Image 1 (cartoon, helix red, strand yellow):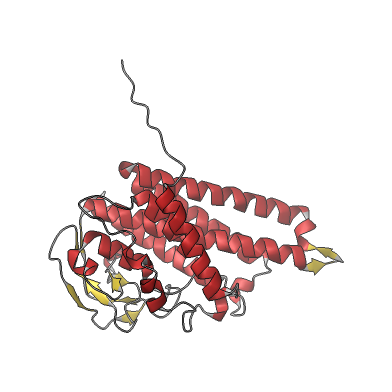
Image 2 (cartoon, rainbow, N blue to C red):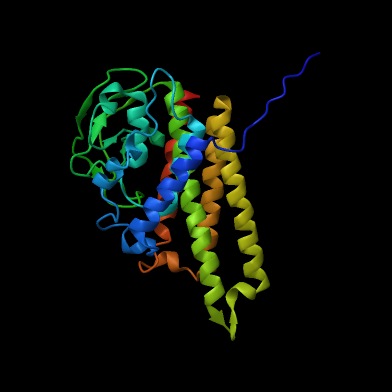
Length: 300
């Protein structure tokens, strides 16, 4: 009996690699290494005009089926997530990729994402001035409409996200791409928290020693580093295997949440203060998990 052997490319294409490098440089220039808390709820350190001028909002647009792959999109989303900058780049990328109306639109675009338990859909960046909503991606009407009024989504990393009685029709393939791309952004956030925590434990001292020298802290962060590798691999797996997209995305986001919780613990519970901002990515990861769970229920 013949067996089908599935292989997975762990390396991005040159396009995806270049996109990640370019976005990384954009974030370094914009944030200047500032703590997440300094810009998570205020004015973003990178303007939408800067993003648009760089062409990052149209990176995923396909021309007769040709262009960036989902694997490439994962690299860009992961790099973007690392900065934790509150601009609707990921939703705009996804909308422009699957909607002609969105692709022709010059400004930012958002989409309505399902939440578990019949809750009103989550509209990322629904309160951003000038953002419009795509009514259908891959199915339904291909239109852009104003975002209706809604209530702030309390788990969102900033008050820019809302819940509203509005829907975006999604084709199954689009739902899978959304799940994987959101998980990739969460993976970037987790990698940022891990890097910040490693820097923190090298400098923070107790009993005359850096806390990073303590065995318990070393073990915690070693486990977190493994979780980061697992999350990255799971996202890649989900991008390469459409039938595993939701499973890979959920596994990745769960690992990201573990990393965020470890980062908060290693930094002495500073996620419960406002000065460092560790809780912002954690809240966003929990919300992402809810969205991916709901997408799987609707489109598996």
